[in-house]
Length: 561
Image 1 (spheres, rainbow, N blue to C red):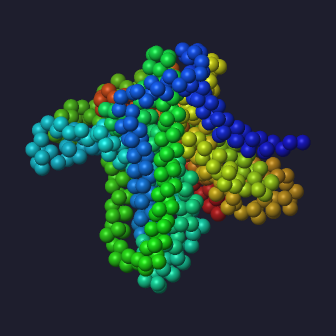
Image 2: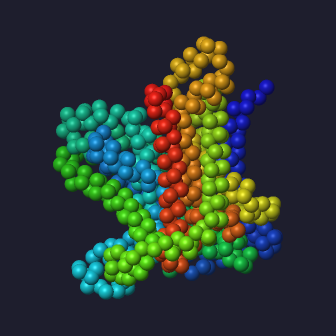
Image 3: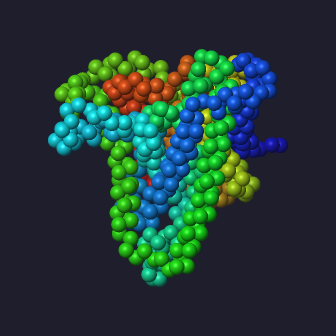
C-alpha cells in the first residue's frame, strides 16, 4: 500500500519541474514559428531574424547582463563584509532584526519607495532644496530611469541584501566562525581577513544556489525595471513584456524568441559568475600565501555597516514618503512636508482596491496553505525513509528561482491559452504556487530537522500512532515555524508581478500588478495607497506569525520550536 506521504515529494517534483519544462516547451515552439493559433505557419527562423533586427537590442542585453552581475556582486560583498566584521555582536543582531521585515517586502514596493526618495522631486531633493541647491523647481536630471540603470541596481541591491543575509544566517551555525576568528586572530589576521580565509569558503558553498537565484532574478526582473529601469532602451525582460502585450498576436512569436535570448543572457551571467568564483578563489589563495593579514580593517568594517544602514534606511525612508503621499493634500516642490493631510486620496482609491485586494488575499492564502501542506508531507516522508534531500533535490527546489520567470511563464501562458484556462483563478493560483513552494520548503526544513525526536519516542512508547504523534505533538509544537512559513509564502505571493500579469491576462489583478501599472502614471497619491497595501499585507502575515505563538505558548514557552 502506498503511504500518503509519498504524494508530497511526487507532487512537489511535479509542481516545480512540470511548469518549468512545459513552459520552456511552450516558449521554444512559438519561437520557431510552431503555433498556428498565433499566426505561425511552421518551422522558421524568421522570428529570430526579426528579433536581432530590433533597434538597440545589444544595449538591452548589456543592461540585463550588467545589472544581474552588479546586483549579485554588490549584495554579496556587503553581506560578506558585514558578516565578517560583526557576526556574533549586538550590532549584527540588531541589524538582523532591522532587515527581517524587508525580506517580506515585495520588490515593486521597494522600487516605488526608492523612486519616491531619489526622484528629482523626491524626498532627498526636498530635504536639500532650496537651501543647499537653490532649486525652486525639480531639477531636470535623469535619476529615475537613468540610462546606466544605477537606480534600478541600487533598488535590487537593497532588496537582495536581506535575502542573502538570511541565507548566510542559516549557514553560519555549520561554520566554526568563533573558533576560526580566535585562531586567525592569534596568527595576526584582521577580523575580516580571518573570516574570508577561514570561514567564508564553507559558508559560500551553502549559499551558492541562492546567489544564483539573485543573478537570475536581477538579470530578468520586470517590475523593478518598469519602475526604475532605463526606457531608451529598456532591459531585455521589459521589452519582452511589451511584445507579449502587443495586440498583434504575431508579436508573441517575437516575444518567445526574445525569451530564449533572455535564457541565454541569464545563462551567460551565471557562467561569468562561475568564472569569477574561480578567479576570486585563486586571488584569495594567493593573498593567503603572501601573508596578507589586513590587520587594520576598521575602514572596511565602517563601510560594511554604512552600506547595510543605507540600503535598509533608503527603503524605510521611501516607505515613509509613500505613506505621506497617500494622505497628502497640496504638496508643492520644494516643501519638505505637505500643507495638509486628507483622506480624499484613500476615499478615491478604495473602491478600485477592493477587487485586486480580494484576489491578492485569496491567491496568497491558498497558495501558502498548499505549499505548507506539501512541505510537511515531504519532510514527513524524509523522516520515514531516513533520506535527506541531496544536491540534486535542492537544485530542483531552486529551479523556478534560477530559470528566468519570463522564459517559462511565457510558455505557460501559451499552454493555458490553448487549454482555455488563461485568466482563471486556478491557473493564477497554480502559477503563484510554483514560486511560493521553494521558499516554503527552505523556510521549514531546518526547524523540522532540528526538532527534538525524544518527544515522538515518548509518544510511541505510550502507544500513540505516528499520525497521532504528528498532529498532536509535532505540528502544535512547531506552530511558530509553520506560521513563519505561511507568512513568507503569503508575502512571496503578494509580491509576484509577472505571473499575475501574464496568467491573469489583465482580468485578474493583484495589488502589486496594479501598483506597477500605476507607477507609469505618476499619480503619487494613488500609488501611495496601493504601495501601503503592499507593505501592510506581508506585515500582517508576520504579525500573526509572531503574536499567535506568543499567546498560545505564553505558559509553555519550553514547548515551542
